[in-house]
Every structure is written in structure tokens, then in C-alpha cells.
Length: 91
Image (cartoon, rainbow, N blue to C red; front, side):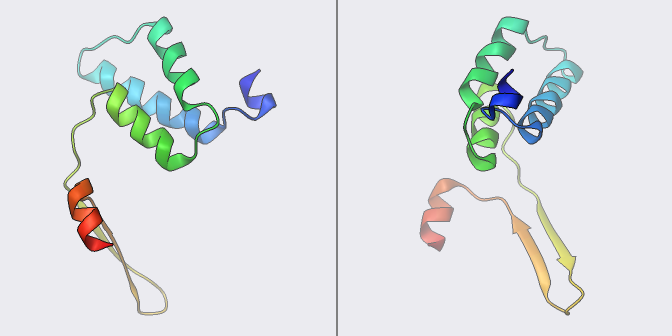
């Protein structure tokens, strides 16, 4: 099994499950063959690359949200979504 061999992990499977459920909500049925292809694509990938693969394969909309959370040390955690061009400019 792919999990036992370490080529897939539970976090990746959860992400795939969420993407499949979202597709189903939108009326799109993903075949078991396509699901198997996607699982093959994400094998041995880290979280970032898994999310990128799923976003492309499931044609997920581009997120435009931001999240600001207070931290116990009075700092603030900020999560934002930006284009690759914006990201390159930030670096």
C-alpha cells in the first residue's frame, strides 16, 4: 500500500478527499481512474506541491482571502493569497 510504503500520507489523502467533495458539490463527478491518476501525481510530494497539483487538476478557483489571527505573545499571524508575480516581487 502507498501509505505503508511512505509514498502517500494521510494529509495528502485528506486534501484529495476535500477536493473530490468540493467537485461533487459543484456537480462534477470525478472518475476512479482520474482519482488514481491524481494520487500518482502527488506521490512523494510535499504539502505545497500537493496543494498546487490539486488546484490545477481540480481547476480550483484562485483564492483571494486573507486571515489575521492574534497570537498569545501579542504578535499577529497574517495569511494572504497572492499571484506568482506578486510573490516574486515580495522576495
